[in-house]
Length: 318
View 1 (spheres, helix red, strand yellow):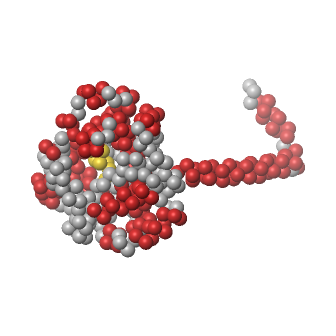
View 2 (cartoon, rainbow, N blue to C red; view 1 turned 120 degrees about the vertical axis):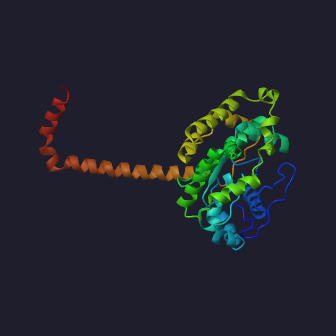
View 3 (tube, helix red, strand yellow; view 1 turned 135 degrees about the horizontal axis):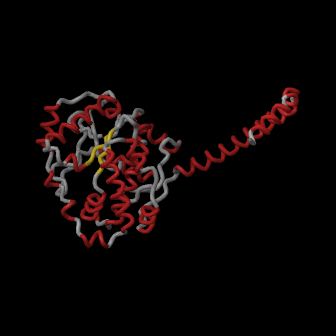
């Protein structure tokens, strides 16, 4: 969700590690940080469980923010790529009162981990576990009308076949969601103006020593999932299946590096209450069925058909 040009929100300033700009709205980045602080988290200490953004304590705050996001709610010509949206995305359903389509960008796990190491000093293990956890949260927000794109393919858009394929993929996604379609010439112009594969320095920074000192099971799990996604293509369903749970090796690293903090309220709060209600409901249903069963057995029709049931049971043994 980046409002540059179309609705006049200033972008983050350029930096050495991204000299062409981040293409992220300053307002949205600040709001995402606020949202994370509301659940006692931050971008590098994300929640382990999905926050319940629809709870009363959050809704009151979101209502006061709606006027500030008036332009985002009424305008469709904007996009933003802040990774924190993997966690905060569902909060905007209550702020904007509408759903914004998702184009999930999947990057090689070791490249993400190396980038986080270079920029923020996070260990490779911590970076890989954060990569997994962010994608886990993203998977819970995806809908069939969304799409998934691979970062390495975006760096290869000078390849005409690759550029054509992704253009069609994005056009189809926009069309499914009722958004204004852009022309192929606009797409080609954007590639020529914005694409700089040489600025992707992460893969060149990975050393054998860095990976050798990292948890092997974690590396293997991340690479296995990424390979599966590459093999199966850009299906949102495959993405959700790949990140439907957090493996033990990921959880171990998250806790070892004190990365995760449980949000309050979190999904377990709802799950526990839900399970209690479901248990009581099932108990009542069981009692009702038992009463019905006793009533049937006491009925004259049940008694009259007893010989037929005996014959049926006898025949079923042969």
